[in-house]
Image 1 (tube, protein in one colour):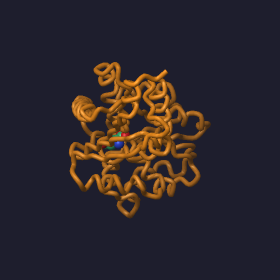
Image 2 (cartoon, helix red, strand yellow):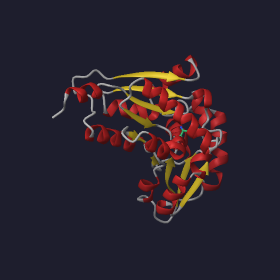
Image 3 (cartoon, rainbow, N blue to C red):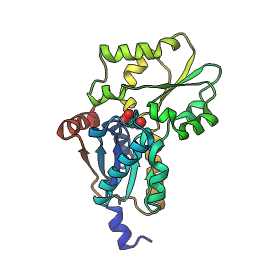
Image 4 (cartoon, rainbow, N blue to C red):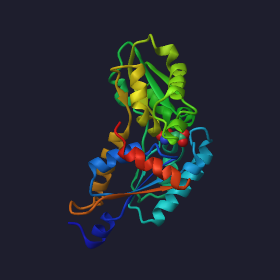
Length: 261
Ligand code: DGL
């Protein structure tokens, strides 16, 4: 039985954040799977990138963002950022033990099912790849995995630049050593990179590109269900986009939310 308090809380928004616009790739899935939920998405563009900062700096920034989202009465938090997950998820969960905090990790586990005798390329930020969480994941599912830190790559997505000669040059350099290898899967371990699928697929036609977005949103649904926090079927869902960087990044977010990919 759901009581009145729970019904009120179920109508509260879900807070979601990233260092910038990349987490919109998670939000797109969330809106599709949970159309009755209200989402507040916060992109910390002013402080982006997170991926080249220290763990301590990313933890401090993540704390600030979560505080701001909780002021807006969010019933759950989705960390739509692999880097912030690695740096901050454990601390935030300890600091807010009653709050559902859903986080993400590079999809090495699903990729390991596709690995035989070739290689799996795992693209993520330098911070994610250097983190303890990734080392743990790699120890379990890292067979055949080549980890590729990608400083400077999220900035293309921040600029709304999802293709073009400069991006192609970036990928040519990054992928050069693997063009003749048997690449069995590519892990997109940063939420920004999901917006670059088309460009990456151009280098490796037919190779599966794995991000953790669907799994993260299904986990959000399970957590909300388990705590009687799912918005009722008659609730009107919606999206509110916020950025520490002002109006321009919000425009990019809006465009990415609706973009045909
Ligand atoms: N989108 C973020 C991630 O998933 C990181 C981008 C950055 O700020 O470096 O890791």
